[in-house]
Structures are given as structure tokens and as C-alpha cells.
Image 1 (tube, rainbow, N blue to C red):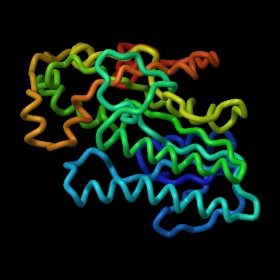
Image 2 (cartoon, helix red, strand yellow):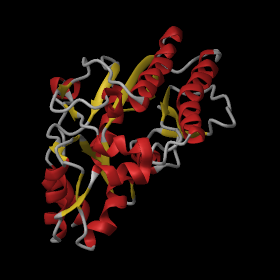
Image 3 (cartoon, helix red, strand yellow):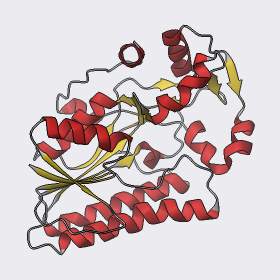
Length: 278
């Protein structure tokens, strides 16, 4: 399969490119800013987007919105103009779609939440779905907190936790829906290969944890204390509205994957951290 990929140089994109090439596929990196037409491809994986983990100034909100909404719109328009459009369009989404939902168990059938990130993600998916107009099968994996080596959330957490200064954020009661990078790559492979898979796909491990539970597990894996508390007001002072990414609760269930019999290599956090931290 010939697969065009935006965001191929990012944390997930690099790992996914390596996995797909190892399986015998050809991966063609695409730069959204250049909008280079990709005429000879069977599938497109769309990962590109302005990082959400920054203070949401007016300018940052504009960049985040433009990269996801307008960037996806331009990409879909370009693909639709090809003589032979791709048969599959896998466009990354995020569990931020659900907003702050407390202890509610969230599946792909759950309604979208409220707030900047939730509303942005809903529009992002809407733009991706436009690819169905030219016959593409569209899959929008809603990705949780990705744990892997060399980048992502874990890389940002480790320095503080290794110093014994890690701990919960705010009340710690907010749910964290996470996934090991190896399992996420398998989810993308399934999305590309399985003709019966379409629409939203919760890309999270089947056992989410609260933030307090997550920090205890990480501290235990590193053999370091993890008793610190970062108050919610301090996070809001430091990050503004972006603190909602750290404080909002999303208890996500990968219902579609489980119903299809998807086998997680790392369903629980303990074994996942053991694998990543050795």
C-alpha cells in the first residue's frame, strides 16, 4: 500500500512511518504548507497540527484552529480533486472531543463536549468526514494520552518524577485515558486495513485511571515518591485556559476496538510503564 502522511516527522508520525515501512508499505511524507498533490496513493494518514500544549493566547488559538480546521479542509479538497482519490483517509482526532465529563463512561456514541478544545475537535472531525464525498472510507481515531519513548506526555513527566517531585494535578480525580504507543500504531494499522472500520474510533487503553492513580503508578515504576500536589489555580495561572487539558476528566472506553476483538499489548498501566521504563 502507498500511504501519504502529514505530520510524518512528529512523535507519532515517525513511529508510524517506521512501523508501516517495516510491514512493506511505502510512506510518502506530505507537508501541508506546501500542499503538494499526492496523486499515487492508496491511503492518507493525517497527523499534522499545531501543538495544543501551549498557552492559549488569541494568536495560539488562531494557529491551532487554522492548522486543524483549515489545514484539513485544504487537504480534503486537494485529495478530492485527484483523478484517483485515496480509498482511505485516517485523520487523527483526540479525546478532547468529549470535554469535561466527570465519571461518565464515554464511547464513540457519546455526544461532544463543550469548550474550545471539544468544539475544535468536533469541527476537525467534520472537515475530515467530507472525504466521504469522493468515496473514501474515513476513520477518525480519538487519541488519548500517548505513552512512548522519546516524546509525548511521558517524556515531559519523567524529569519531575525522577526528582521525586511528581504528584497529582488539582484534585487528582480527573480521569486520564491513555494508550501505549505500540498499541496506538496497531490501531492506525487496523484503521488503514479493515474495510469495516469507519467513523470515530477511541484510541485508548481499556483501563483508564484517575490522575491520582496514574501518578502513583508512575512513581512506583520509578521507585520515587509521588506525593506532590499541583493546585488547579496554579495550573490556570501558569497555562491559562490550556490547563483544562490537564484538569478535564475524560473516562473513555475503546468500545469499537473491543467489539472487534482488538488485542491490546498493554491494557493496564503497570505493564506499559514497565515496558517503557525498564
